[in-house]
Image (cartoon, rainbow, N blue to C red; front, side):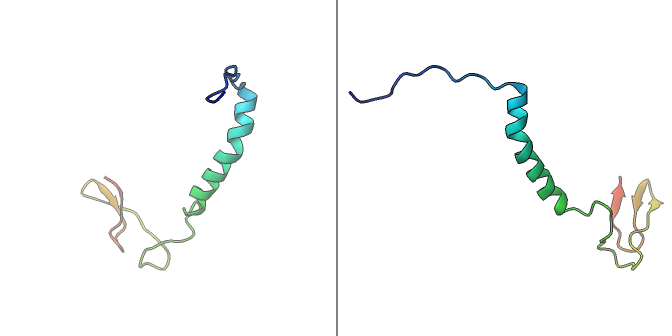
Length: 72
């Protein structure tokens, strides 16, 4: 006899089981995303050695040193 064997439907996961499976995966993904960002703004790409400076200009908030737009 060949083909598929009939089995019962798998039981749905409980909330605790789903959290136990997804939490390690989600925490690894979040850590990978946050590692690429400067969460504490220690690094900057501004020409000003002190970092970005924000001023209002024509309704926008920009850095006068590198022209990075923070808010439009």
